[in-house]
Image 1: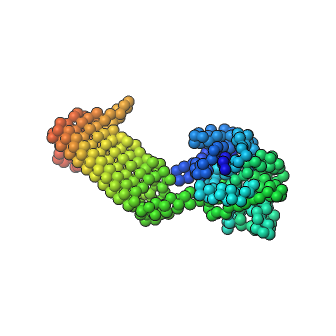
Image 2: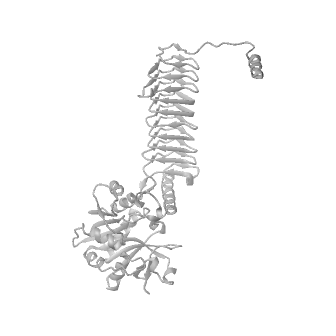
Image 3: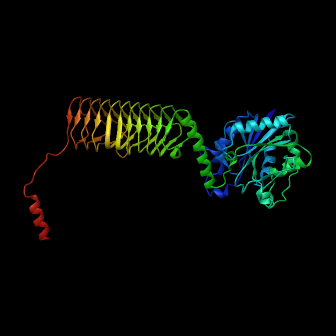
Length: 459
């Protein structure tokens, strides 16, 4: 049985009230249409077609190789969209067509696989996915006959008072016999409240002519559609639960899983500990024994075993084994902390390497710099890396001691085991083992306070 997949992604999405097309809103780090395409791909279809509306460049740009976009010029319903998809599908005698909406990201490959098995086993003209839902408002209802067989599907807006009491809903996911689909989709009419061509009407037509209809029932959450921002948030919460539960079963400890946000692309090892308020995004990977949180945002970063990160923001950085970040640190792209290194309270590091066991404990900016092993950068130190035109690098040797409130004016180098005096503005290289000091000599002026007071009173 060859399967050709059609993903319906041409909905207006007006209720989202967003500048983004509905189907590319992110869920757990991926556009929602990507989740649907991945689920459909589990059936190994010989062709995948995605129906989009005009000017859907953002959607088309996100489609994987092999997916064919087809434009539906006017959004006149799901059956109308399928007609446009079929224009590019060369159906064979043994082909079957999977139809799935792009705004149901919770649908799983396992469910689609079970539906396909049922479709094959029963030889039905159409198999649909249904679920029982406590509040089915807004969903089409599945109407069965006295023997429990699916008779028809009725859209919510067209239901009678009795039909609205039915809690079995249609998820908008179908498998059609390819030998029948062209003829029967062309027979769908738009005599309904919305004035659109509905795929459920095609199901009713097939049933009325004696063709078999089967239904695979799944959990209601898999068929949760996204039409509004609150529904998007609800779907995202379900994904978080799925993702976090899977990681905990693989040995990751979470104090409060409901307050941990992990993209599907993130990779964690057993033994990671996560406290509340942690956001892990993109290609982030975390080694076993690392502890994250409370309240961290980490994107596209590599975290070593035993690292401790709390109350901090990290973007495209590398943190070594047993390194410490925070609280209230910002590690910007290109920052690398060696094993046992520290970027402490109110420290910002950007495009810099902080060597093994080196410490930047507090209130410092380290940009475009190299900090040697076991060096110590005193409080209030900054690397002045920008001259108004170009960025320049600062090099601090191993075991160097940078005094508090030092300004290192790049390009400049402080040698191994060298010192800088507190409050210095270092503009020239400091040799290995030397002390670099640049500041005016302190003066004490006796009687200054009395003279100042007298001057003020005389004014």
